[in-house]
Image 1: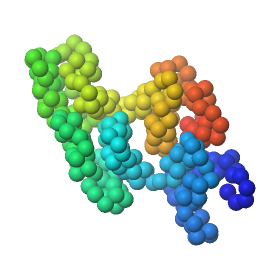
Image 2 (image 1 turned 90 degrees about the horizontal axis):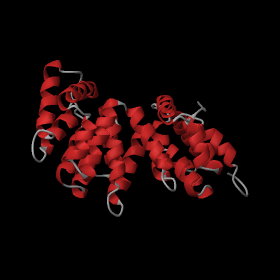
Image 3 (image 1 turned 120 degrees about the vertical axis):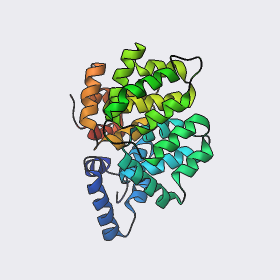
Length: 291
């Protein structure tokens, strides 16, 4: 970064190709050697989408998620897509870490801020997810009962009992829910997603669908999220950056495999078609390889 101009290739190689733990060590060593904050220096050297991506990579995962949630809540209007994506996809342990990081970084409680910014059944389910108290394992004795309750709450009656959907989808473990969805299909003759689309609308529908998709497969949910971010008219770079940064060390290989199978092309090649320059190079580092 010294002198005129910036050597982007070196920055990419040193940061995008490292793990988050290594980046934290580099950041600490940089401060010790130069007495400066690496994040701030990168901000002043880089610009545009590349800056957004590299700065995102510099935060530890829980702090990154906490910052994204804070931005989504405190900005003009609420970026519901961010709330839905993070709270539906993270594990209970991850959400506990996010809660701690949120309080430390932003001085308030995530739950309280969500309550101040959302309403209704949608708010209730977000608050349940923030508690990070999902049941563990499968309760065989309840699988059939839960499936019947979901059917009775939606398809079987006029109107919808949203509370039943929220309580079951918000509190059961992913393994348990997968069994419930199989039982549901036998009873209802259709997938639970189809019923949710018929029964619910707006943010509640989007959140319930995300919870269902993540219970079935988190990597599949993100393969779809990444695909949608690039296959619109114009790339949704905020979503693309957020998903590539947050999944790069969690389940990127699984996402790549599912992406290839589902869409008939590699994630790597889609990124190549859809982005350019150093920003593209950084995304390809995070993607890893071409399938």
